[in-house]
Image 1 (cartoon, rainbow, N blue to C red):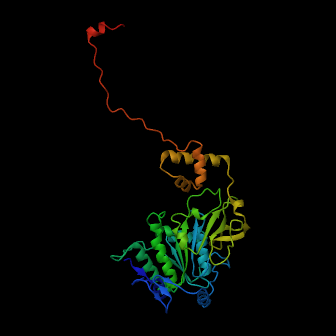
Image 2 (image 1 turned 135 degrees about the vertical axis):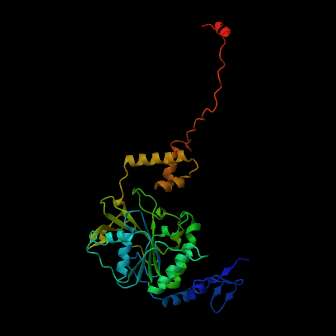
Length: 372
């Protein structure tokens, strides 16, 4: 018989350890049935009324709420880390914050927060930057994920921090992030830690390659969408086609309030350095479509050529595979390939000649009989 788990008790006892129980039976004193808890709707409302109302943690926006897991994703070079460090430093005015910077070197970090390596910026004292050690060894019998989580728990116990930024998740999920089976175990453990420690977690991720020709969606997140299922909120950063340093922020998922920044009202920021601090400076609001690149005939021809070349190079690729790789949709792929027929036939290579039949020499007698 498979093991059954009392999830509520594991959370309540603060250990995060889920222990097997017997065949599930209703427990009148707790309302527990195996892995479930059952309550009347009014009872649930009453219990919720005893809990604090979650705070908005950044500039009174609905981007990040206290005690929630938030996912931020964007393409390389758009400023995910810049905005995240800015948010973390602002939050550190009132709360202790752990920022797990798993990418930048010390020198790279200093360059961003100084005036060409002079006049270093002074951060809030409650902001703690966490890096990987250059060399570390894991205890025998402990896997990578477990050692990461145990190290993080020790940091939380030592600092008392309740806000954690992880920049970025790609460094933690080493397997194929397109597979749910790779992402789910770590997300399960991070989610359990969120409840056990009462954490606010902001997880930073990359997006797939996009062409800035269409609005950003959840489908642009790199890797498994399983991560979105765990997140209470999701927002992204887009590149404006109007100016090189202009960015926009768009919300894709919110549970605790209405959306502030949807496709018709994105927040516009200029990427600037003020007083030795690289930051997002709010300049206004606008419609996302106003900041997308205009589609030219050349763009369309390039896309169609890439679709045809990908299919010709690997006929087994599905419409979805091609669409994900090129940042378009399955219908566009289908329509493009339909122009050439249902399939694109790859060029059949010429079979090389491996043997040569020798020519039998002609004798003088036979030569005299030839008509020329």
